[in-house]
Image 1 (cartoon, rainbow, N blue to C red):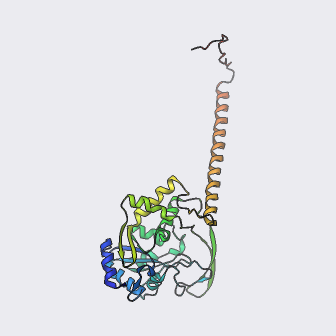
Image 2 (cartoon, rainbow, N blue to C red; image 1 turned 30 degrees about the horizontal axis):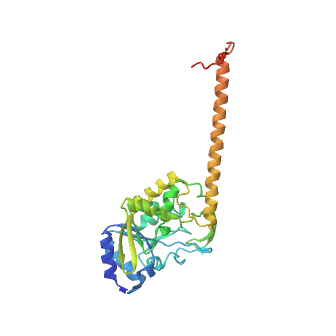
Length: 301
């Protein structure tokens, strides 16, 4: 089955995407089957639906080692995201590992100063999209590619956020600089969000060709993820036995919990010592007669 531009437009309308929407798109071109015109057709359909008043945002992540050049480094997040990046009217954020490309009314605001914060921190492109009441569109993929969930980890300040990697960045002048960048954790456990979002009827779904298309709001995703993390800081970690990242994350969580318990014990001991000293000062010179149990071999009751 060949999918065309109008098929995609109709499917997006059915999902509830509208003129003026701010939408973050995570996508797999191959999930559609065959698309007449390829990735550019999908991009055209998205822009048709949200119009000039809307804003299209896609991840253009660069997970490979090497030098990040905002103008030339390709997106490693799929063919549709690369098609957006190459558009003349697209603006790309200058984050060396987790940039986004955006087209539309808020593109300037969303992408500005992304390089000055952690990839998913407050002030990042994703945080600004959340503030703009963005929707999240999944085209043939699941929450394992839902980058907004990393934002919930930042807001909740989970213990496993401090991994770093050393990257090179090409500046506008052509100079190469290097810096340490926070590296987000594993996302293979993010499908844990399916159940709470589906129970709350927060995901709309429809097929477009062979593609399973899903639409939800960024706010409901972040709120649901925060609730999971509040109840269990390991809630979004994957269960793969060979995942060293999640094993390390669990160790960091356990270490922090041990530190918290040790601190609590120390604080209790200090408080007890303080109470004893206070009693000793208050009772200085006073004879204390302790209770002596009844000597009779019977219960006082």
